[in-house]
Image (cartoon, rainbow, N blue to C red; front, side):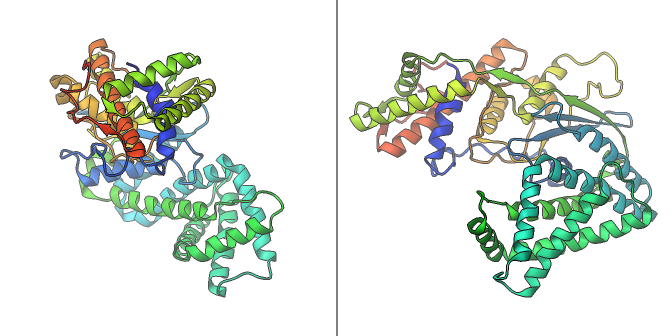
Length: 461
């Protein structure tokens, strides 16, 4: 059975009925992806490096993932996956950042100056992306700021007023001074980094006064003629995270434990996004048969109740409408990397050159945000079904622990082996089915016969 219709057209809609948490709270949790073989320091380093690739106020759905490979020579290979093509400059940013990190590592006596360079590179990338990617929101920011300055009924103490004014003034200055065409002098760099320090302190204070900030946003929304919902807290959180991640990256670079990593010459391998079709029939009989088979497999008792049948008829109608709109799905970045490394190790390159190597990556995939529910299920299925020799080579790939949330559209990875793909697809489908069945029983008070995941699932593969 195909797991994609169940996840993309039924599970996603069901999760919204339980406050976007999946599986149903109190039921089987998604397996943890934390590894006993990954040090906390290495995981933090890779996740931090991935985090600075995206501003935290990024466009919804934009993700980055990467792995680090350390061959026996002096290379470090970063394999990068993004879920969008032709719209990002992440590779160029990483190359520039790595030169600065390596320079800091090799020149400890100039740490202050080298750290400032790293701040400018990261903030230029982050602030520029903040403005460029959500330009309409930047314009909303200026409208909010103008409204707030003109308001004579601003609530809150003058200290908070002054901090918000300073945040917008500094942000505007940073956007102007960190443009792509502008190369700041050393004196300007020192001044810019000083402003970043001040910006961080202001954002931290405003984050602690979140109730007051929310009230200002509500006042703006009520007074605005247009529909106004400016995400001020998102801006503040983005600035805080950018600063904290930059400081963390500088600390990691100067940590002796990472001498072997940050002292190497970077070679970057960027993977193209993969898109899979979601082209399914739109006739109702197909979807009735599909969902009936799942309910039968899960041996749910009480499905003849009229209330339940009406609800499932509505779910099928919603699934058809969704399938009509969504005709394709991206392979999520972390799964793109897992698939790539699996096939690369199965057919290693003949020559060790640039970003090509037979050396397996370190067994941690850094992600700009935690993996979704389905990615967590897929990683677990891969570890369960992969042949021993491949697990030994990959040393088991891990990520941040996944969030219990459905993120669609979502596509299944392939690993270049029909039998392995079939086994993984089946275990993923089985898990999706059982979690959906638990939701149904939870929502309608129905009875699901007890069974183990592997042995008693009806018509098991």
